[in-house]
Length: 106
Image (spheres, rainbow, N blue to C red):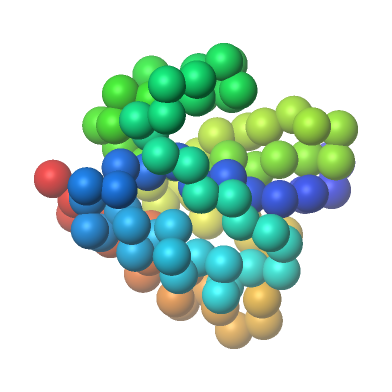
């Protein structure tokens, strides 16, 4: 498995709960977190494998960018699996809480 280079959080800035994930996730991980709006016009060009529900602003996602540049997308609580290798010690409860927040988003 390739090493994680950075994380990408794609979210709807109009969604306060989703914005919280983008704002607070960097405190939980050891790699850079890049925040992107789901409303960016070229988002699908930048990340061609981004799920349609994410680019359509229906749900937030975390992209795990590997050293080779490939991106694996995770939505909902499954995102924990993707970020586990880069979680700071003791950050698991906070990360789970942040992702659970996304499930409660309208």
